[in-house]
Image (cartoon, rainbow, N blue to C red; front, side, top):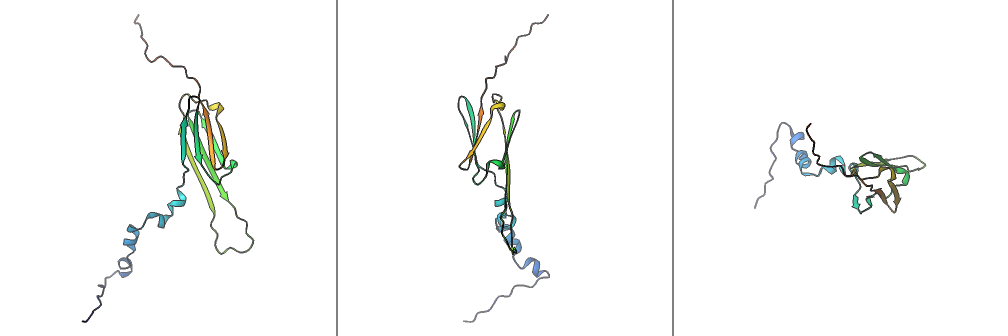
Length: 148
């Protein structure tokens, strides 16, 4: 039995369409091209409520206390962190990749939060924020107005 090789047809643009780069681009996860895995990293958050407090727990291993910034502005709580890893190596670098990580999360606070007494503790890779509740005087929802 005789076998013959099948030749690909020659086109005017072999480098553009013959190499399969279009198929590879559309059939490959975007992470391979753009490395979104390292760019978009927001830590997981748990929010819990008791009768007296709200608790926000942020999973942020490998950080230090000084890396966090927590701001409360009336009805908005913003938690952000920035970490820059510096590695001191003597000698010449053949390749060096810097590692910066930063993220920010914002939460709308309910009306019954006592913003003045919010506290935060970072231990064992978890940032724990306690938001005490305060009593809110209920305003009358319905009012009858007399016409004079």
